[in-house]
Image (cartoon, rainbow, N blue to C red; front, side, top):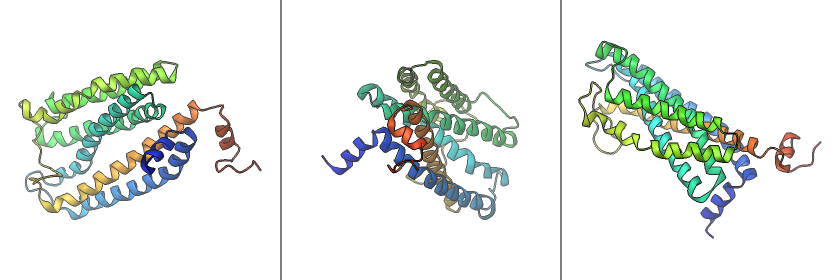
Length: 255
């Protein structure tokens, strides 16, 4: 067995995952926070104002990373759910459900910042634009996953039911992405491409890349922290959890 496959098998062990998450959560939050701080500083103080939108365009540096994360996290949640349903891997159930709150938060940030940005650009806080409407549906799907998971007492059955909703709901993601192409939309088309030429000026891209990196690292920290908490709740009563409660996280005898 290759070292990588062996590591994945070990990661599926609840005690091993707890140690892994405990080690990497602080680093993910720290590096994510630093990256976002660099990105926000560049967005506010280094990037010139847009020649059409002026300084109002700067909300892009929050809106765009949040929008990308809202879709990426839902896709990841559906991926974990599919693995959990097919191979019955408990850790994937936990990770899938841990995705939902953070994904919902990014979706809410996307909608709020989009409304703030839309007011000076469109003259209204809200319009039933295809991109805005499908993003709102995405928020409802996140809430549905969280609500279904909370409504069923058995954690494994709850994760499977909510995971099935996530797998079905992932079909919305291409609709969100291509909505500005398929329908007449107030929302501007794609101007930023990580692969290929962007219509955005090159001097404006570095802060956005920092923000993208920061939000991903922050999400990793949030995912591991939430998954660790759920893992501990599910494993309550096991010897290794009892040892953690007595300060024996490293296997030392209680003092």
